[in-house]
Amino acid sequence: MKILHTADWHLGQLFHEYDRTYEHQQFLNWLVKTLHEEQVDVLLISGDVFDLSNPSASCIKMFYSFLNKAIKVNSNLQIIITAGNHDSASRLESPKPLLESTNIHIIGLVEKDKKGNIDCEKLIVPLKDKDENVQVWCMAVPFLRMGDYPVIEDCNNPYAEGVAKLYEQVYQCAFDKTQDGQSIICMGHLHTQQAEKTGMDDFERLIMGGIECISATAFHEDIKYVALGHIHKAQRIGGKEHIRYCGSPIPMSFSELNYKHQVVVFELVRGKLSNLDIIEVPVTVPLLRVPSRHSKFSEVLTALEQLPPKNGHPHLMPYVQVCVLLDSPEPALRFKIQSVLNGKNARLAKIDARYPETVSSENNGLVMANDKLQELQPSDVFSKIYQSRYNNPVPGEIQILFNQVAAEISQMESE
Image 1: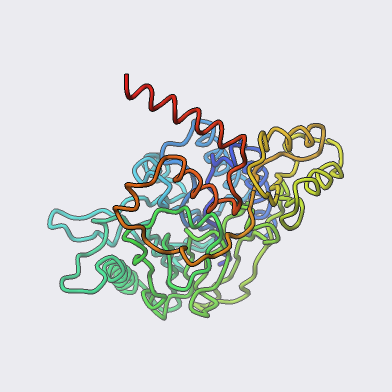
Image 2: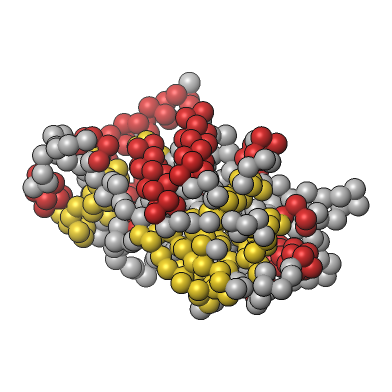
């Protein structure tokens, strides 16, 4: 069986307020073509299909149109989709009754029986060959929220140990089903220990203050492949070839400027993993950093002026991060940069403005006593904050304006 692993599509995501529908559609078109050309038997989508728990109608239509096209070009294709932390588990699962007669399986919820025991059977999907013989059992585990995993008494990390216990239970249930020649694979949407993050991953909400990282040992050593989602950078985990994040298919932040996005393909032959390979996903819209390092404002404007003029499809215009080094606040910074970019083949996405590092002094890092704080006037606080942020004294004209505002506020309070 040939299997393709992808995750973290985030359909509906905005990139610095720019709509990405065109990019997502191009990826899905490419994926349909790849599934056909590679003659893939199973498609695994390990969570975060959508960027929002309540996706727009156009995003939902894009997703189900993809599923329709994928099945049409490869009638024997089996698809397993699990919910990620960005997905609404129940909303993602809602079309399950309609899909029961197809080879499309969606698992969003962790169901339990009347006694509160996890129904592991609902988290296991049989994968069949063209002769309808089961070759592989897939542990399709979605993103686990509090209450989804077993409660472990008197343990150091209830989340990590509870999640590990759930995977142990699901594996045992799958193992009990296996017969000679059959194998087990696994899906998960979680944060593993030692996973290398990208810039966008830092915005993911932590569950329990950063202690939610799961060890690679949570996945039984006899599982042939672990298809992970949640971290946007493709990588192996624990030095093991068969435990992988495939990463997001399109750039999620400027930290991925020189990063090659990918999907993972592999084969299971007679119960053994073989021919594991990656297929690079073409980038539809490039990312640019201008200049390549932070420079003075005049140099930045010169570099922007050298960008080529608009040409071709507007949706293909690169996203630009402008890197500028300032000595002090620059009035109308974004307007000035955008004025230069008008007519250029670029879209201003982000301005990364930096200032000279604050020179340390003997007073830095000291906590001011309460009596000293009481002595400070608003202008003193303003001066200290300005100095710490820009490493320069407050310019005279700005100080005058601040004093005017402070005087007006003082007068209002007295009235």
